[in-house]
Length: 287
Image (cartoon, rainbow, N blue to C red; front, side):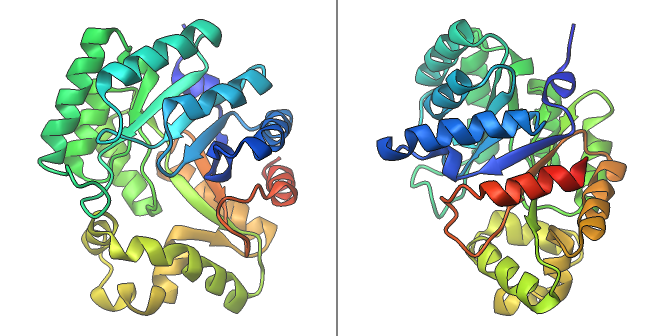
């Protein structure tokens, strides 16, 4: 029987634009998904506050690629509704959807309380509704969430992490669980310009303690978090530079224990854009 690792391959694309609900962009999103499949990517990760129903148009437009949420917040959708929508997708597109779940952030969810216990309870409800553990993955940064990913899901999809975090996560997860970190890629060789684009993308996350506390645990300082992020922090959580340097940076995560890399292209356009030319360049450098 194939595992999640077998079906999603080494590389996937993480994108906010692919989950847009703007009807005017439906054809564009479908075309982009089909092209990403043809470029050889194994998974499409629907970024931001995505939900199960966002996956259906992309699954319908493609033939084999896996589509996952990265992530659906447990506070925004009940487990019962999630299970029902999962069942609908499974009937229409068997084995091609991964339910990525997470607890989001206290600043973004008014119901936020005892997040680990709430996530475990949510998984209990999914179990009772028949959503298989091997078809769900968890956004996990700290040890307890990683343990939950190991014991109650197919694995973990950490966001905004370093290779050092990946190595620690692999140790917690063991050999069998999926580890699929997200990594932001800037196709820019000029250091000043690359870091400028990276800081613009990073700024929103530096106000979220889930991420900043993780950075501090990994050995960064408050000074690294100031001013949009130090060069040291930027270079640790982004891949930028020549094609060789970007490829080597991605490989660093794989060597640290990642099974799959969810790659997010950072450009000078809005996050909701579909950077198709950059995706083509990324696919070429990964070959």
